[in-house]
Length: 489
Image (cartoon, rainbow, N blue to C red; front, side, top):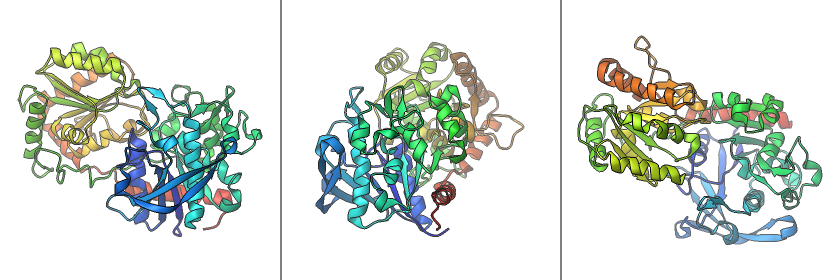
């Protein structure tokens, strides 16, 4: 296809700000699209934890119309995504982004989140006008920027009439529900506050409106595109999504193997690959030492890296923790989140110091070390739109134990000694009983079927889920969106 001008807008982008997988996608997909020849720019807020001294200041202020709030004025900074020529622009406005968190503090969402991200969305339009950049595609992400498809057809239609819009849903659970007065801040007219667009139980639902108005909608795995049309995973929007299924596409996220690769990883104790696995033993020993566990290369070590949130299955892990201590294994956990979980897992670690290790918080270096030093990796998510850690784990020869949902089901094939393609262990029922039996099965395989375990480990390390394939799939979605909008490219 012809090369496109693409505006990519996200609330978080690696390495500048991250709370979840959205940031990983926003930091990697634009680089892959750039390599395919497209002209792409990225826009995000300048949260005040992003050091502006390392950014380039763009002269002149940006006037942003905010309805009854009047015109607000923002600063602009720029940089490039690491190891690329992709420009990224930062919207600088202290009242909205000069805070301690991205979306919340101490577990409490900011009460003006709708205004903060409507401001980001409108700023992106105004920035394009300032730069003289006319996008063929506006690619928006989750609820934070989901008002942009409608804005491109209404408030900013004169400058963006030939621009198609694509909305990617990274997590349907978070929909951006606010007081309906957000319609006034959008300046789009109250006729759009109806059950087919932004209205949901008499509140404003940003993601619902985005789904209605985007020319194409994507999810971050094929399985998740199907799941969100069901009551179990639809979070109240399943019928709305079913009504728009013709423009819904599932595209599995890729992985940046320049960052997640044990043969070049500077964060781990010793590099390794399939032709020499001795480094993995060294990484395991270093990980055991870091957490104060018994140093034993023969005992299976299970890792967990993720948010201590119900979605991630921490309730299931907590449920079986007492049973796990009776098995001959070790567990290390890295994460932060729900306070009960932080206290519970920390307490378990203090009681069973040679078997359980917990680090409450987040450390990118330690995340790499857990991927490299573990034999198995635990991801018992209740739902998982894509998941990246199971893909990282495959590359590090750390076999995933997952629940068969979303991207976990798409990427992991269950262990079968007769299979030449299996790469992990998975269970289906969201219960502690199912998780416990699967962990026990994986541990038993580690001890009693070492030959097949090692074959599966090397097979997993050779698998690739890179961004080039995903980017080409997005190209096809862009083509669809442009044709739907009636624009020839």
